[in-house]
Every structure is written in C-alpha cells, then in structure tokens.
Length: 389
Image (cartoon, rainbow, N blue to C red; front, side, top):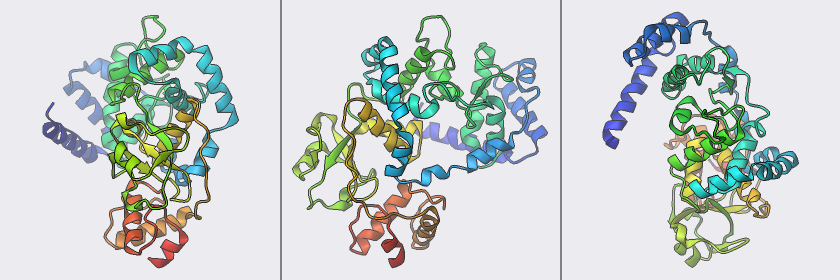
C-alpha cells in the first residue's frame, strides 16, 4: 500500500476512534458492533463476542500508573536484570536450545534477544497477567488517551475468535491487551503467530516454542536484520563533539571510528552501516553505539529506558560483559523533570506530554539548550541545567 494512502487511512481511522471514544459504555459497544458487522462479520458472532463485556477501571489506573519509566537507565536496568532472571535465562536457553537454533537459522536472531523479552515481559511465562483481554482492549478504546492504538486490536481479537483462537470470557493477559509468554497484541498474533511445537495450533500462553517462534517472526517482520548487531558498549574520545550524539543523529560506523570511538570489549562493526551514539545518563556514564536493529525494539515498546535495558540485557545474555556505570552527574527527580519539561516547552521546544519521563523529544530539547548554554551537550538533564533555565 502506498505510504501516503496508508497515512490517510490511519489518520481517518484515528479520527473515527477519537470521535467515538468517551461515550457511555452501552452506545460505545453498539458502535463496535456496527463497525464489526460493516467489516463483514456476522452479527450473531459479534454479539456473542461482545456479550457480557464490561469496563475495567483497573485498566485505566494501570495505564496512568507508569512512573517506573521515570527511572534512569542505570536504576531501571538494576531493577529489571536480576540474578533470578540471569539464572533462568541460561536454564531456558538450554531447555529450548532446539527452538533457539531454529530462530537463529530462520530469522538470524540470537537467543539473548528473545530471552530478554521473555524475562522482562512475563518472567519466562510465570506472570502473564490476569486481566480479561477483551475487556482491557474495549476499556482502552473507549478511553480517549490512545483509542487509535487499541480499537483495531478489538477486531483482531474478533478475527482470532472466529478462528477458535480467542475466548472473550477466558482469555487473559496484560492490562494493555497483550497475550502470552512474550506479550503480543491480537493483531501481532494474526500477523506473526507461528506454530513452533508442531501441534497444529498457535498457543502463546502454554507453549514456549510457539511464543518464541512467534516473537522471532514478529521481530523479523518489523525489520530485524539477520545476524546483525543491535547495541555495543563503546568508549568516547574526550574530543568528541557531543552534539553528534543522540538517537536522532546517525553516522556511518566508519565515521565514528575516524572520530576516535572504539568498542569497550571489541571492535566496532562497520558492515552494519549507520549507527548512533546513545548516552543514557550523560557523557560521564555508560556509552553505547546503537545499530539499525536497535530501532526495531521501539516497535515492541516505545519507552527509551525499557528499550535500552532490553537491548543491553540481550547483549549480556549473548556473552558481553556488564557495562561500566562511570560516574554520571546527578539526574532529576520526576517532579523536577516535569518542571524542566515546562521550561523547555516555554522556550518553544516540543517535549510531548509533561510526564516526568526523559523521552526522545525531551532529550533533544535538553541537548539543544545545553549547546546554547555552552554545557556538555549530552542530552542528560541535571539540576544545574534546570537552574540555568
């Protein structure tokens, strides 16, 4: 489909979803029923699918309660990468060695990449969530924060239901509608669901082989480059122009080499093409080179701190040493970060939502102001920067 036409379709759908969100529950469900029938589903099927559904206030609370992403990379990674997860990752790598060999052979994805997702999402299948999936998707679609994201998932779940792969009353998962051991949304299951154990069906909740092969299929579909790097710890020369750093800028790997950037535990990989320098907690903390595969992580989760931690954990599970934490400058609290975002917005920067989270837009604005004030432009906000603004 042509990109311009696709953008128009998505824009129109987002407009429709936004127009119907926020209505009372009963008319909202009727509207979902009308759209499903218009898509070609038989009304009796749709009515059985929607029968007994209910709004879940706990889902909205969970959606609003995401303060964990206000943590910096070092704190966040320490919290997520536990000894328990390291031990069980190795055990599962051995237990499912045949499946990981297949993932490597068919998709060019190392075991560590999916082991990291499996660990973070559900602790290797132990904690898959106990929210009714259909109620969660309906609730998030009726809410007006992100209806364009969740409303299409309702109809994907309906398609799974018609195939016998979704039970509207019994299927459970995360509060955001993800299902199974590595937490996939219904549309992703339709697009990438894979029978990994050869039993003739795709069961992401009870079959690790199905979940892993489906996750690998999804990563490849999202653009994962086979047998290519994703993240590498590096050492920066003191003379490096820090305005070149950040995920919004990239250079050929050979150019980074010419500028004096080196790998901390091995050579850089010029064959990967372009790369960016990421300084999660500023130039005094750990430094990473992000290769094109790193960008695929954002198709899985859009939180920078989560993505960086998942990508780093995958390198750790692939044999890389732990990163050097360095001695980064003190960062900001969530409240101070919100104050900073307001000041940046007042200066004309687009920081997105005032949420206390150091996302890509806030980092770009911070870097611009640091450069203006002749501070090290490493996109890491400090109390000193807040005071100067």
